[in-house]
Every structure is written in structure tokens, then in C-alpha cells.
Image 1 (cartoon, rainbow, N blue to C red):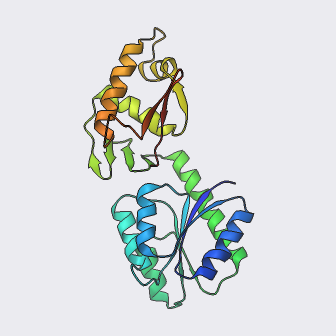
Image 2 (cartoon, rainbow, N blue to C red):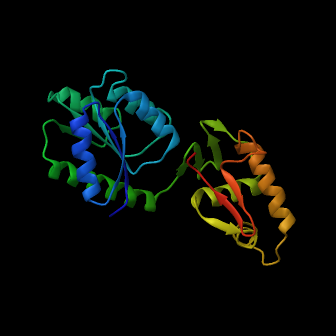
Length: 230
């Protein structure tokens, strides 16, 4: 377990610093949000392995953020933090979709173990039953065979859907036209023009400005690269 990406949402700088130090010691990446507004923006632009979410914040409380996440289909594991120890607060957090709950003050060693357990459990679950692929603003429902960008359904043909699903499953990797053709068309006879046509169609449907693509870029002399998190 290493290089997991954690979003820490807490308006107390000392808490964020302590968690960042502890997580980095475990080889994890950390993104900090000191308010609910920033947290929501990060959730819409990046993917995380786990979220540590404070309940009490001045602009948007943790319960509201959690409720919004789950309503949008963001199922990233959430460990909630709270200075309130009432049982009903814990029940509310877990009822809204939190995966675990920890009251302040807490021992960092306990928090780290909870985080590792949640990430490990989520990893096992995803391997056994992955019905949703989420990368940046894109969500692909592998059961309904539907793809969304920022919750807007994208209109794809069956072949476009297969090609885009392959790209979603391999963000940040460069593929030649030959590799894409073999993976999606399952044929050894390569048709460069076909790949170019389908990439143009995908860009027209997923890019804000197809003439200046930011998600699917051409690597000159090699092939294509899909960036999911822009």
C-alpha cells in the first residue's frame, strides 16, 4: 500500500499539517482543502483513494459535502472527523454514507490504521465488482453502458463507447494507433484512418473545444494520450 491519494478537508491548519505529515510518512499523496467549497471543487476535478472529512466547517459542513458526494455517485471512502462525541452525530454521518467516524482528539496511529483498512476494503470491493469507472469529470457505468461528463449523458455509438471505455481504464498512458485498433476492434489489420475518425468523433463529444483538446491529446509520431483529470 503506497502512493494512495488522500483528500484532507479540515479548516484547522494544525490538523491538516499533522495528517499530511503522517500520510506522507506512509508514502501517500495528500491534497488539502481548508473549506467545504474547495473540497467540492477538488472532488469534481480529481479522483481520490480516500477522503478525511471534518464535520464542522464554517462555509459548508461535512455532512452536506458527504450528502452531495453520494448523490452525485462519488463513492470514494470517507472517514469523518468531529469534535462532537454525541452518538447521534456518528449515526448521522454513517447514515449519510460515511465509511467510518473518528472523534477529536485522536491518535494518529489509530487514524492511519482506519485509513489503511478503508482503502484496502475498497480496493478488494472494486476488484470484485466494478460497476462504475470514474476519472476526472467522466463516469462510465459498466452495467448500463452509459458514460457521463459532469453528470451529463454523452451520446456515443457502440464503437465510440468501447474506445472511450478503454481510454478511461488507462488514463495517462500513451497508445499507438495499432494498439488501440487491436484492443477495441480486435483485428490485426490496422486502419489508421478509422482511428483518426473515431478520435475526432470522441473529441467532438467530450471536449469543450474540440480544436484544442485537453482530454485526448495527440503524441506526434506515436499515438494518443488520454488525460482524465483536467
